Length: 264
Image (tube, rainbow, N blue to C red; front, side):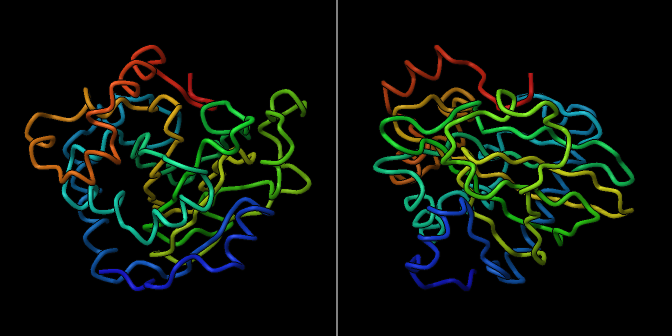
């Protein structure tokens, strides 16, 4: 169902380390892209105005949350071994899925996300603790809300709100992650980043598969958010990736019920 069978190259590892991101152009097969779009659109239609309520809503933006519970296609996406190899190149040692959300900035909008680091965290003495994999279900262009990123800022060990006057303003060193639909971006999201305005008249849908290091709380506590039916159908490998049976994960995730870089 996907066409990137090679392991992470040394060049990609260097780019992730030095510039904080790697874009896998046209990584999804046409069949996988079509299936993911259809599942996402059906879920947006089913949830309507309540979409994203399990997490937080964002102005001028459509969001969905807890997607692992909402379809086999989403469980398949978060557990693809080839993509997990890229996550392992960012996060040292063991990691788990923290959340799977969808985001689509409204067409003809001026809303720009502030620059932020995911979970409001910088790397610590153990290294990186966060990695976000962006599944681009539409073209990411300068006009339709492509993610902006300040390359290398994951090494600065500073949050943007502590370093710049206006986190909504363009940063002189930022770039846009642009790529055709079906591409996947792997991002060390200790780097300063944020969504830009979708000034086009079209859609810009994506999935955010967010992973965190084993000792960090999940953004959305999978054990309690997933239905019993979903949990009963999980493979042992997926249960491990979701930390369903991890007592330490339960302890720290319940003690930290919401973690976002900018949503309040």
